[in-house]
Image: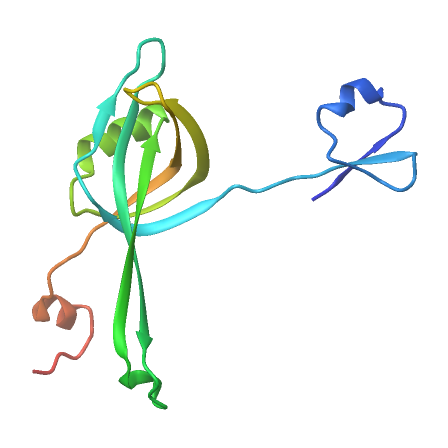
Length: 163
């Protein structure tokens, strides 16, 4: 994961990449980092395709993820009340092919799995106040198809269906 560089490389060139200098002055270590997000949830509204003058178009939509847990003082874990928290995520799709597919096929209520990265950006609102926005930049997008229960299909696949 780490790349060791000899001191022969000029420090001026490395300075922009180096995060940590090793204890021995003969080598420098380049640190790698990771910004990865995986989400599975439902789309909150139909995607919108936006294009700001001079910038690439982007498809934007919101995605809801749910966290569920049981609460209560019961000794039997299964007996507690079920609580739920919904978190909304702002999703932006910039990649040309993926952006167009997301705009065309993703709809409100679609179940989506995505991989991407977190981006913390700033913008000026209508009142000229600086605001911060957290966005998930999608790099991979999978629409999960949900089929209605069909006893015939399950039997065809070799499962036993009982009423």
